[in-house]
Length: 186
Image (tube, rainbow, N blue to C red; front, top):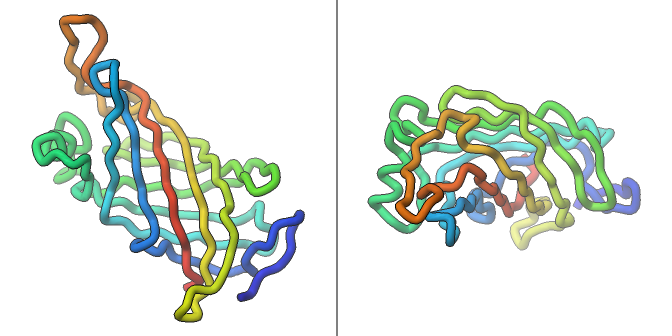
């Protein structure tokens, strides 16, 4: 494993890493009926991270197929793919491209970048927790991460909702994004 010590962390040496789809989950959580949470994920995506000599100059990009949304309910998934939400036929991909690392503390980094959903691009801030590096049984260099952020779906044009008789709305505005994963040296 090609690692180096940087600010008390054992991090990979510079290079490009691709997301290991089999060991990465791109998930989300949103309030439902003001009383519970619905969880889902996207199953079809690709991405890469380029670790720079100065880790604070590293970059990342991600492309997610909107059609691959899965919440465990075929009817709900169909609705989420429709014009009311992702409009998957018209806007087949959600994308993220980092613009800068704005800081870090220990193994936690703050990554800023452009998230595009339905052709609407907004700057978002991600909290990235570095999970460590190693070599898998097949000799590939890998490193792990956990990423979280929260977005307001309405800022991306996902404004469909339904008022409830008891007050409030069917679908919450805030969406928590949770990514757990591994990346392999390309």
